[in-house]
Amino acid sequence: MEKTIYVVTCGQVESGKANPGLTMTAMSIAGTIAAKMPEIKIQQVIIGTGFRHSQVAVIMDLNPDAYSVVCGSESFPDPDAGIVFLTDGAEISEKKFLVPDARSFLNSLEEGTLLITDQTFLKNLGFKEAKEGQLVQINNDVDDRFPFLDFTKFEVLFDPNPRLQTAETLND
Image (tube, rainbow, N blue to C red; front, side, top):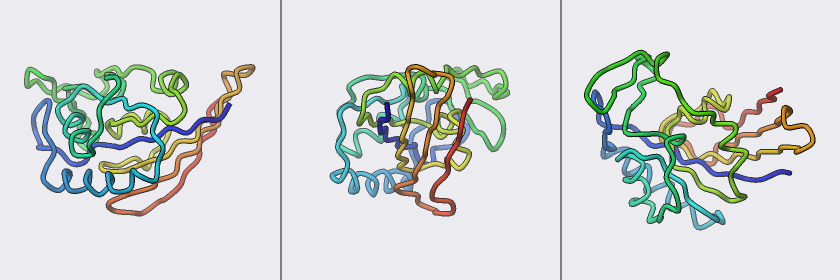
């Protein structure tokens, strides 16, 4: 059964700390994404548990239906540096930071769900072009008879710095 899920990735955050807030530029980008939202039919909104996720929801005038650490937490990953800032201020290798299974979570979502998450979520699904401040549409086609075959198509609906606009993965 195919379903469409939308993902807003948090934009740039204040650097070097856990549970960071968005920069002014990221707030502006969230406002731009919000302007595109009337075109999209949203059934539910699920956001990460970090301050940055809540900021995006407020800027976009969205009321979360649920919160999930799968979408991001108070800890902040810095994929460029390969580290994660924990809430106590410690820095650890991203290899030591275990992330829940994004694929199972995606498969459990209702049609028309909007996620406010970190780019790590999309990268864990195989979308290597994930960046900060994107609006991405995921068409997820899962056949219950063959759950190990999962064809997922990603389409970038908004990118503040466009380079690559579509990508597909076949996971088996």
